[in-house]
Length: 70
Image 1 (cartoon, rainbow, N blue to C red):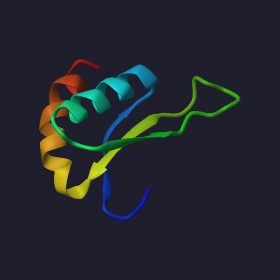
Image 2 (cartoon, rainbow, N blue to C red):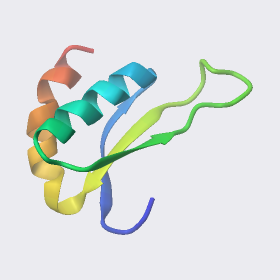
Image 3 (tube, one colour):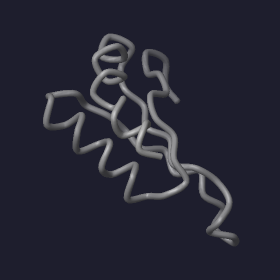
Image 4 (cartoon, one colour):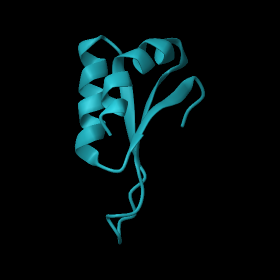
């Protein structure tokens, strides 16, 4: 990932990554999902959500309930 971005959320399912991205977008935080799933074996790999370093603390607070639900 480019400099200035930091990992804020990781999940094995795409829909959870999209939910997290939507939560952040509703709060005005831009995020990017990096798909690390293996193309041959869809059960391997993660979806990793990145935010700018400046938004990291706010994003952690917003995603706290989502992480606790796992």
